[in-house]
Length: 280
Image (cartoon, rainbow, N blue to C red; front, side, top):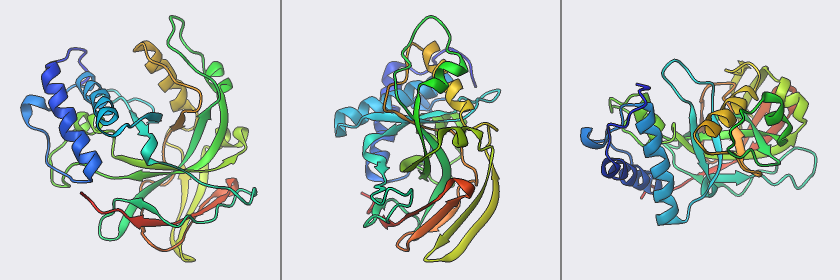
């Protein structure tokens, strides 16, 4: 799957991107893309992913404001863009790390529920531009300005029954719907948080209690990989961009409407509320 060639033509890549961008903008789902424009290699999948971002920028003024990432596998590259219109920055008006629930963040739901992934987010304080010299982990760590509690919102642009593979999901942004960026926490504590006890409650009724472990061990490790991977492609990371690196507790379903409380062990607790966004 990770062959370096591009069997898809530029026209096929654009056709795939137009279809996936439409699904993302409307919330509609569909089957696997037709074979003539369906990516089957990692290189083609990333080419389609980049074309989706360009299509969203042209059609909706969308901007890439960050990334989700994870450590790569033998035949997987784990990275996908986060978009400005789907990034919700929580207001810590109390200044104590406890967020008042918003009036309701509109999200696409299934039967009154949405999937969330409890994660930590890192915000860059300076650019990590493309260059000839590889990035060392210490350089990337020094570029981080802050760490935050966060929830990634999950949504699938493919039918549940669609026989899709990793390249299909990579092209479509790895099921990302958006990111809820919570309060800042101590950076050193975030980087050391290899395990966290995650609890989720809705209107004070317990939904989940799980001893969670970060899939990469050290939460910042995928960010180190991302910076070097993008550098090798002649790309880079920019100051202000947000990067999430993996969930501590899978992707539990939570109800839309009630006030949610998500506790990230000793790092803190956040409150928030979702509301249903009509699909187009």
